Image 1: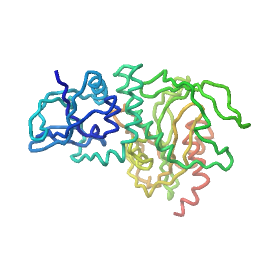
Image 2: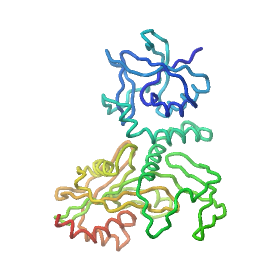
Image 3: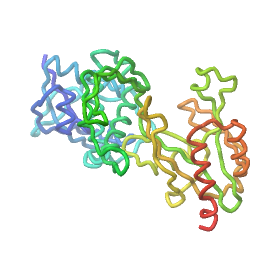
Length: 372
């Protein structure tokens, strides 16, 4: 039986297709009539549309390549179905991967060029990693892990493009660290990476091989809304698992607005999105004041935080509860005077590091912000 598969969307990207199929595979141009590609969060979805036409390509796969493609498409919960495509005007019986049901919030326009610009590099990094993990973990696990692999890949790209000043610290690089063996003993929503490595010592010699482990996370933002006219701030409150497993009697945490930067999203766009999702607060980029960017705990986690103040009018903002139902978020907002926030820090009712850091930055800069 011939395994003729119609590929569309991101799998028209030669490098990604080679990763997914395990090597270069010849592809013939093909079209699928009465279908169209829709945009779902930057990725294409193929749905019926009278009079439409989806451009793509036809590949003939052996069993091994088909198994790799089945696994990859299962990450999106796509399944194969029979179709008829046209190659050089001739009908060909083939199969295509489509969702079991149409996802919500679709846009009509999807562009491969736009996807390449925003997602292409991170998708290739994440896809290579998910196939490596497939030798260890079940598809059901990797379906949960893959979106976070995409976010982590975007973080890796962002890190590689960031300035690396070295006026006090050594001007060394990644070539001064040698990984002898890498393992990922845990993968689900987050992951754990373990390296047996050596690194350059301050005397120039190479260290002995040591084992280091870290919690693999992606870049994120924090945002503290501030009303400079009324000297008010907004903080949010929610249950946190970290204090729970540490043994805190009260596991509800006072925090800034925060969230993970999605692949293809800037830190500023993430801050605006999270302000709307967590506090129903509409801000613009012009209202964002950078506080700084930092690793909260570089010895144990890869998370990197971009922190902002969000200048806004809080005079009409009351306490409310919001958050995404899809993520089981239950978030309460509080609008309080800045002095109250500092008192909560002094009494240790506030124990969230990014909130404390941003509050102290605001203490140093709020007089300037009040004159803007």
